Image (cartoon, rainbow, N blue to C red; front, side, top):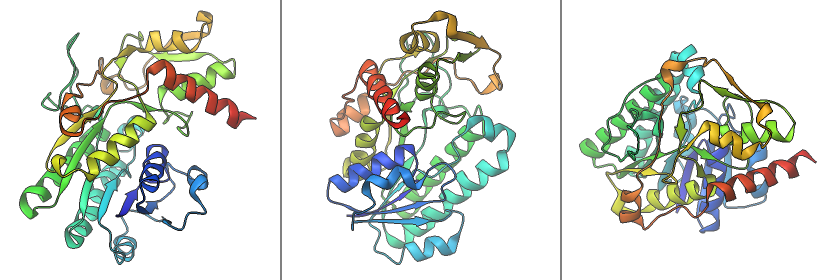
Length: 312
């Protein structure tokens, strides 16, 4: 198939692109490089079956030009992903994540292309102790980022119901691994690993008892591609995660054995914090036979190895 991956030069997008190419698909990447980089795709730079377009999903002419190619599948990853930035600048996240998604949907409708919308576990309300979050769990727009993702989900569902657009909504839980940023908008795992390698202090927001379900990025990419291509998933919402959560305190201790280098600091935006996240992935297993293959310990080891290599 010919697949358009928006945000394909980003962290998860880069792994999705690699997975698609390895399965024999032709891939068109659209990315404005606000979160991604050309270097993320350098491994595939000589591939004749990969086309990279630098542009914005808010630019209708750019999209029109891309869809002159026969696009059969769209994996829509492009988004402003920084929760704190969304609180500080809600207009930016609305224009990109809602209006941009609408623009892509319009092109998908005209092209009769399959559409996979990559949402987030951040749309969920918090879970009680011991409760895994399924797709029917209540949602809560605790930040403009989550609100924009829920708005995007609703638009995707409306195009599925009103126009018969073959679409699926995917809600990956916290994803980590090689090529993820180690700055403020990056994930907690590479941020902690980077600080541990540099001999720096690992800062934890709040009391550190908040939990996350951490999924290795190659498992996430496999899930995204399989769900995007599956007729059984059309019209569905699917979670993906490890199925186990860990407190940020325990994660920090796993990565850094020197407890004196772990510090608790005041949360910048506590209202957006979700105290507990653990994924119920049973629906993905039922529809796709998908399960993650990488343990947290193994994934952290792979991430550390990659970061060590790139430091040399």
